[in-house]
Every structure is written in C-alpha cells, then in structure tokens.
Image (cartoon, rainbow, N blue to C red; front, side, top):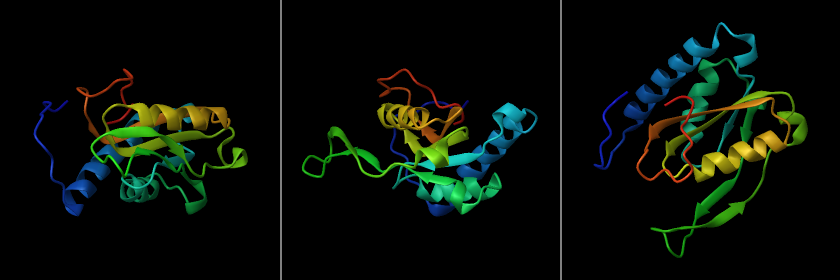
Length: 151
C-alpha cells in the first residue's frame, strides 16, 4: 500500500485513467477465479465516479444496462466546505439490482459516509453482495471505519 499523505492531489485525465486501470486489473485478478465474486453490475455515485465507472465497466465486460446510478450527495452549495444532510435523487430499480454482485465505485473515499449510504441502498434493493472501490482512500477523515474492498 502507498504511503498516506496529507498533501492535495492534483489529477489529470491520464493519471485518473492509469489509477483506474490499475484498480481494474486488481479487481479482475481478485475476482476472476471465484464465481461467487464475479461482478455482475457496477454502481456509480455521480459526479466524481462517472469517468472511473466508464473505464471499469468496459474492463469488466459490463454493458450499459449493467451500470447503475445512485444520485446521492452530501454537498451543500451554500456551505461548500462543509458536508450537509444526504440528498437522495434517483436510485436503481429493485429489478436491476436484485441478486447482483455490485461493484460500487467512487473516486474518493474519505469519511466513508457516502459509500456506506450507497452500499446500504443497494443491499436493501436486493444485491447479493456489494463490493466497494475507490482510487483515493483517505483513512484520516474516515468516520465510518469502512475500508474500500479495492483501492
């Protein structure tokens, strides 16, 4: 695992692509030989994870109908440096989630609250399992104790 730094990270499209494909190869390596772990759907919390999920879904051989979107956010436009209350927009249908092994991907896992809320929603919709992935895991601000399965 890489050393943890408190310095800001400035990404380019190329660096996000490289980190995402590296993450994708690790997901494939760790799930390839276990049919129970085979990813059958991928979920994104827009906005940050959109590019990442586009790349990962292609690497995992998932079609557009297997990409699920959960429109949830804690961002407060009035107070952009503070998180607000969860706002939930659209969520996938129960039929699109039921029985699926879903990879929930987001670019940053800091407090873990968004990932935990999204994972809970997917499980309540009937996912058989939800695995989590992030290209940036920040253990310092983590308030949930959750750690992404892949990072």
